[in-house]
Image 1: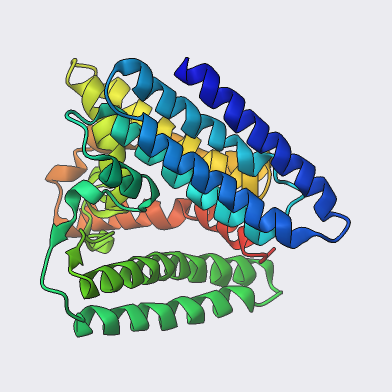
Image 2: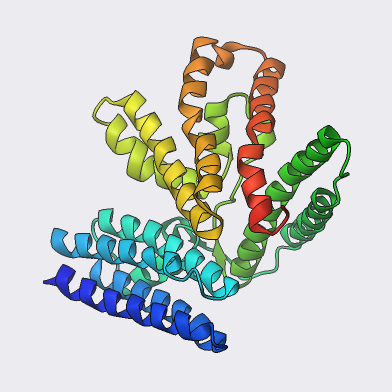
Amino acid sequence: MWIDWTSNLISVLIKLSIYRGRRSQAGNQGVTTGLGITITIAGGFLVGLVTTGPAVRRIAGIFIAAVILLLPVAMKTSPEVSRRVTLTLASIIALRAIDLSTEVPSRSLAWRVLHVFMPFDTRLARRCRPHLDFRQALGTIVWAVLSYAAFRAAANSPVAPLTAHYLVRWLSAIVWVMALFETLAGVISVTLTMVGVQIPSLHDAPHKSRTLREFWSVRWNKIISRWLRDHVYTPLARRGYDDAALLASFAASAAIHFYITSVLLNARWALLMAALFLIQGPLLWAEDALRIRQRTVLVGRLWTLGLVILLSPLFTEPVLRIFHLS
């Protein structure tokens, strides 16, 4: 009953969005912008309401979140800002719906709804004395300046020779992506600290990684790596399928990045992005075979950072094009 009811409701909302999207081509874009975001938010509230208790309701919550993911795909003719905001919200809701579906016991309705819309795991948030963390705020400003400078460097890379063009473009893009993530994470963290909430850091000095395994599982984007560990890796590894757990984790990461990139660009660039994550499994096996973990710190970091930099265009080139730097 829950699945039928929610399926019909979300289907009607998506059809309404598509109808509005077609009308927007006649000049009524503001309505579509508000409508797409409104539908996504309404769906998120529904996920928070439904995803608790019996298994059928938890399944219904995941189903609603999956249907919401179709909304940005159906908004190809909608304004870019509307599609991007809707995509961001839909992606967060989908990840958090899976959190709620495995949470036992479930938290209150208010906490579930709050969790659905947060870009971080609210279960890891801690109370603190409300204050302005000047050091973190200053660090965020520095990251923001660095992000802007790196973005401009990538945008103004020399046209010729071609080697210099891509060398400057891709190296600048690495710095830009890293600085952009740190800026966004810093803004969120500083804001929450001011209202008395402390959250874990996004990264943990990725440049200090001595192995690819350490880079991906410990230091880079701990929000996603923790989510993948809890919902993909651990359930399989607990049953003794370590290799399958590793491949499944990177496949899930590839699927997430493929979805986002395909909505913002197209399938070709999405496949390029996904390839970065699909190739990590074989690289980790090679890393174990070469016993990189037992090598010196210098060898380990050269191996790790060398591969990260070498493969980075698979990630940074699509991201640059998402920001219209073709």
